[in-house]
Length: 103
Image (cartoon, rainbow, N blue to C red; front, side, top):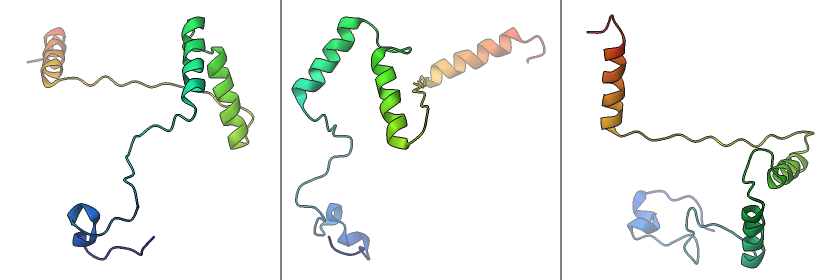
């Protein structure tokens, strides 16, 4: 690997030499053995227990705790719904209409 680039023009995207022989794709999953992955997915689907302290969640928590060297680990899943501008407008309008002091 070469040293630090001194200028933007030295970046591969701008024509400079690349640092790696093959492209490194951000977000490309490393699934390992495809057959084993699909077998695990099929086990999850066959059990019909995808979350909420199911056997695979417990296994995941135990492996993460062991890896980190801690006694306990709790897996959580957070989801944020992206709202459109129209949804935001409707919600704020609805809130104003519900409050007696709103103008």
